[in-house]
Length: 181
Image 1 (cartoon, helix red, strand yellow):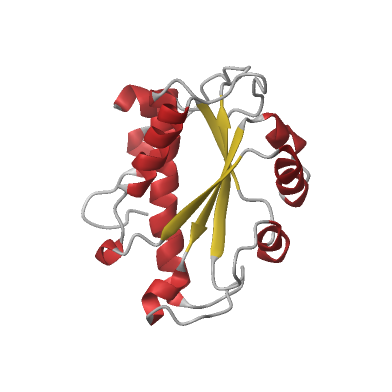
Image 2 (cartoon, helix red, strand yellow):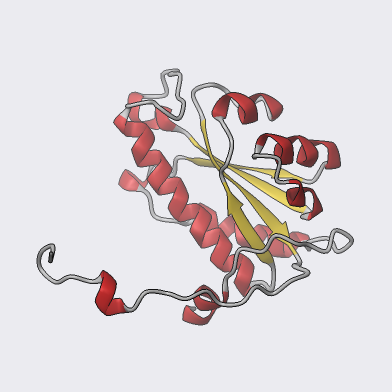
């Protein structure tokens, strides 16, 4: 498993002619579905987007990152903060102070990372993006205002293999027992 984690890269160039096999897609989605979450609330939903026009629209609202259109699949990863208030509707956005929103973003982010690792394990490339505003991305997919789009993940067969980027040494990022200044 550590090899899949070490080998995972953010790929921004895809072979748009090579479809992702349904079995591999299901395994990636399954990895997200079994991620840990606070109180096992599993506050996520995943929208599988293959439609060319929809991918074009998502690429536009995601800071005009048109390379997203090349990916055979875009996974739109959505967090549901209403699980913390009994399903009552609530308006959420980037500046919302609702603590439940922070919790479901954290939980959904764990699911997203598990999907990225499983994509690598399946021989697929991925890239996680989030350079958009809720007001722009939600209407495209008819996502209600009480749901929060955490990321758009490109998924497919990469045309590039990015080099490994330098990582900090463990000694530079780990403290024991308390914060070290």
